[in-house]
Length: 311
Image 1 (cartoon, helix red, strand yellow):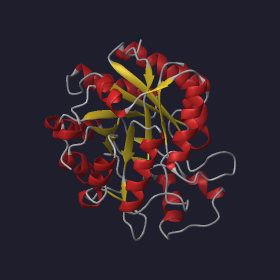
Image 2 (cartoon, one colour; image 1 turned 60 degrees about the vertical axis):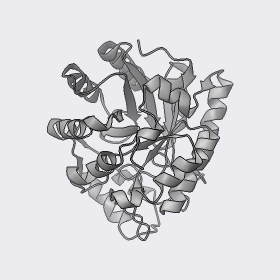
Image 3 (cartoon, rainbow, N blue to C red; image 1 turned 120 degrees about the horizontal axis):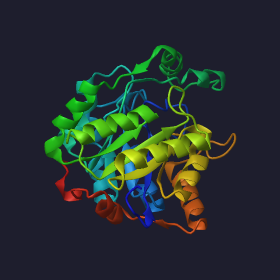
């Protein structure tokens, strides 16, 4: 079974790039907006904030470390929240570009995807009628022919490049095979326990959002990792709250945020990341579950501490 825990870690994914173009007026784009949203999400109950950066003028995803440096110190100064930086980046970025923020800024946590996959956002074209930026519609249409590349060599390169940083990786698994890839790197000693396994449900190209899919992911992870891991989930779009609720009742941790869903109910855009955090806090509290603070999450995940980062 997964590592024994008494409190639920809430991660909030603030702005995103792979899952979400900037099709909501409430999605934070500028460094100030990202900092404000991250601090508010932490105050609402998130122990971890998962961060991307965007070009302020266009909203396009960016892995420029200088953009991250425009909001990371403000978040750190205002909140004890654990900061998690992406290595996923955005469509069309090289591995070197994707790696830079985690490599140079040495966060407590960094995300890492466990496999190449088709990642289709193009069905959103049928639902979206207007776009804020010119790049958004072609981005969605292009995802019909997009492979999100994460080869074994890519994964090993990121793990080895960041080894001296002592960052804990959020291991993102979009399908069952990704769990086996994580087990491969754990067996080789390149990944170190405790693992933070983030199971992703409901994106076209990955595992679906059916309860049986959630159960299969959990059972497989239990068999592969025993008590050497913590399990967290994210559900894309309308699956966000149902998947999080189901996983929490199974002893899991949860991730919410505008990266994964722009919605706060049928036909209602979420006005902030904090709105989604407050909603899941209400659900977890109603289930009799306790919410982990940032420092409690640090102890559970054996993190290096906020003073050991490079920002």
